[in-house]
Image (cartoon, rainbow, N blue to C red):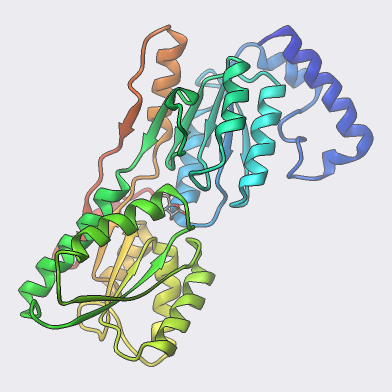
Length: 341
Ligand code: GYE
């Protein structure tokens, strides 16, 4: 869109070609295609998107939402980079985006801290940054323009309240309840909020005991590993709080391999987050008790914000998406049928 932008891109493209970097999917080759495409970009709103990774079903759906919305047909030119859950990759990507003078940067930050310097650089370059899904902890909130995502603390509270009600309904309110938590990526907004929200409810329930918390980094493999350790250490687990569905899938495997069962008829109450289709199917099959929904379809809202900014309109800073929860007392079939992720 801008002349200097085109020149910088051409130089970078030549440099990458000469160094052979164009073979590597994680360097800037995706970001800087050939000259013809560069010219084409001038007709579009160029959006640089720094994605967390591809660690979960939520993430896959989130990325699909981005790719479906930020199309050339819709007037956008998308530069998409997957950080493989590493903040250092995101820092590099954002600096690449700044160098290329993109029109907007959308950042889904792996963790909350460590963004001040790079966001200041984007601000100095006059590029608005919109945060998606997770957020950042910065002193100056003007370092980003808007944030779109879920109320993670509310999700944690919802999980705790569901457990309170469930224990009351099953006559276990007075029993000592032994709980373990599989946490998401430590320091990420979703982990911080879910842990805090559940903790708030736990503190009001004297008979609940949090035996342990450990991170499974939001992945199935690590979720399984952590669950195996929990099962070895604690023979009497009543409740597992798993901060996303993919760790839950790993936990179910570990529980079954240990000769135990989970779900409404099982030995262990299993609480999950995200409500992706595969988890709702696992719930229907009887392995999960409740799933707190986390909506990954954030791109339409981000596009709306960008369009408003393009029109010179003011935008709200915080945008929550709507969410619910699902348990085995509901008609899961109709939800599963309608679910796109
Ligand atoms: O719950 C998990 C993903 O930040 C809300 O990240 C997101 C979380 C989501 O990998 O599945």
